[in-house]
Image (tube, rainbow, N blue to C red; front, side, top):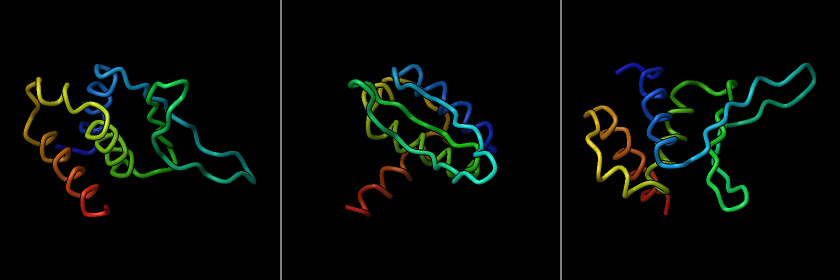
Length: 98
């Protein structure tokens, strides 16, 4: 599955899990580019995706957010193998960094 398709499917899953997914545009002249990441805003989980990041980086941020904040939803849904593999890789990477 292509990265753009993964990004779309993971974005749909994140929204279904009540994660707020936002896209951050590119920085203007003289400004620093932002990076994709996850944060909490008034208790809600927001996933900020920067257009300055590669598709793979944005996919990784979404997969990590889902693995951390939507495990119940992921277990209760059918997910295509490519999505399951990406989520599993995200969980492994998180446990390796602990």
